[in-house]
Length: 109
Image (cartoon, rainbow, N blue to C red; front, side, top):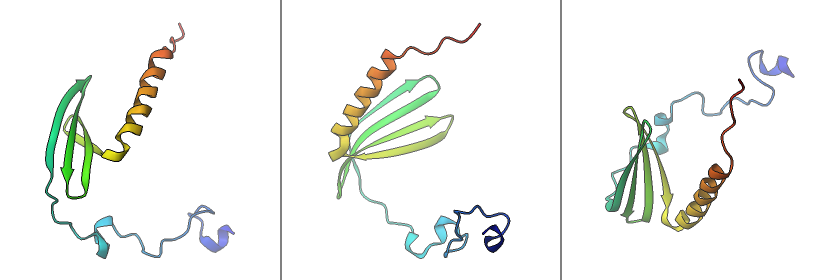
């Protein structure tokens, strides 16, 4: 089967019918006009070298929480729609509890 696909291709890889175009080249990925957002509440927290900004926002599609992590000028953002915030909080509470229960491993001497 390797002979049919070529030497550099893994058996479960398939060539893309779209070629190797960057994301911006797709016709349906034209820049979207900016959406008017209103900030309802915002808070910032510094943890070690990271700064987190949590912003509860609202736009015509609804409310959402935007969490932005800034590490030395590099930013990553996640957005959680408001209907999922309660489930997100429950999961976060479980993670906080688990982090407190499991002490970090002691390095070997």
